[in-house]
Length: 377
Image (cartoon, rainbow, N blue to C red; front, top):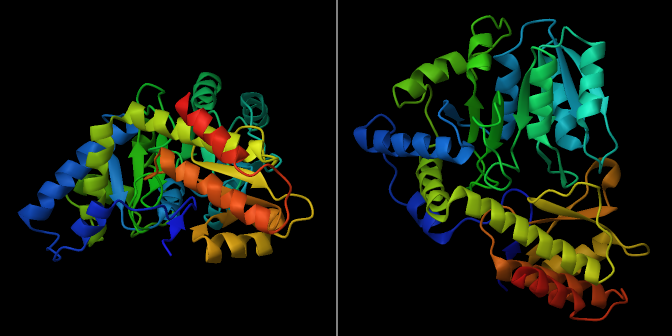
């Protein structure tokens, strides 16, 4: 059985990227690795659409999230965060762990925060130093308008905007310089198409200045030290060499395709997935769908566990379930990273066959036809 991965991280890895990572290891302080770092750093700037530094850390995406608290804020500083899912909630947990005054905007999971909600909370808390938001909430499949929020926050306050772009970067439109962004973080196992273990953090002049006065504890995630290393095309600590070799190759793929074409491809695949699901009578979850992942309500009367066992063990397709109070109520289909048109057709076909087997009533083939139609349009 050929196994197919449709989870929003880890995502599939291109074969030639895997082969490159399997080559004999090299030392991280020699000129050969220096050339790989140089290429990687330049292509990360292309990925983020910026001339500003984009640092690379050997950690999961949460490492860069933590670094964007520990390096910008000081003890007792006020920060606003949006809790609209498992990973927005994480912003609050990190802020509290560092002794910051964490002001929550709690929105119903499945909805996107609005500019007005952000500005209202800023008005109540004018001392706010930073606003922490999530571009694509992996746990719910919801996208947030980070461009509009960044613009509004800058117009109405002196706060910076920190964005979790972990399942958005390399998938959804993001123009760091043009949108006057402050900080965006991402991880390697999503749109960058390599295994978990690297995270990336783009920095504006505003947050670099904040790094000079931050008094929160930091050692491994010291971005001042990492920035100094970046300026010398180096890393502060021993990097995950094989992952850097892999991400260098995947970034070359993204650049060859063209970042705008990458964004358009993800939009098209997400539309095909959603149309396929709707055609067989499934209801989508949420009001602002991400191009990275589609969240689908489990049909009434259907056991997600039973359906998922058929999908995974009979047809070899792995999707992600819901988290926390959404466990058993939704499932999530990824179209993030190394996917093409036929991957979506295959996914909807496997979905149809699995649902048919457990007795869900629909016209077999209707979802595949709808996905194909969306792809052709």
